Length: 135
Image (cartoon, rainbow, N blue to C red; front, side):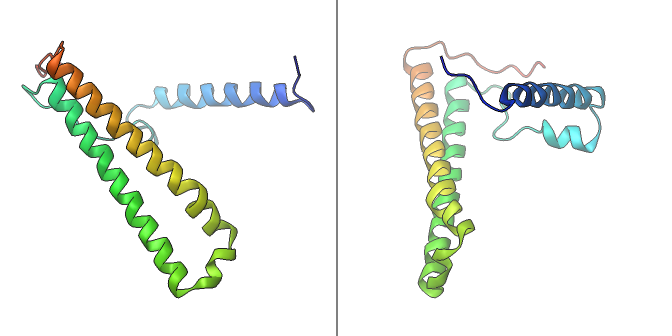
């Protein structure tokens, strides 16, 4: 079995200790702006009386919304190439257009498909509980 070279193990341990410490510190100050930003809820929130299938369907459309935003960025990037052909030589453009945006599009598409499958499973095969609003 291959080992990591040049003190990589120590760097990994230091990274995880720093990460754990940062999360622990954020937990000590739950009302701070940094903590609220770090742990803010993204996406749809369950509604009173909403079934699990409907909630998963809203998540699927939320993911499709992200896919649309990535598609719009693709359009902007390739419009920029049309008007400024030299931009293709820049590393940052290549990082976004050839790496970041395709990964983002793939993640959004897979998430949407998974949420559609979860919604269909809950609706047709169950269980499909209804959110009661207790927290």
